Amino acid sequence: MQDFKFLRHFGRETGYVVEFSARVGDANVFGVDLIEFDSEGKITDFMVMMRPASAALAQASEVAKRLSAS
Image (cartoon, rainbow, N blue to C red; front, side, top):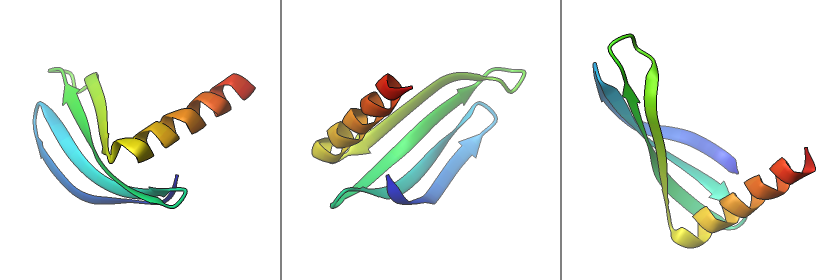
């Protein structure tokens, strides 16, 4: 993933939504991180959603390659 940058964020005491963009190969990717916290400020849930699906699948494939190499 190249040219990663955060675009916007929205938050309150219980969590944040962070919007980002990046490039995977020739494809532009847009996504959001959904982060939820407990009363102590610890992360209780973290979800990443990306589009388009083709770029998200390419990213998942690259992550799998790197994990299997370690």
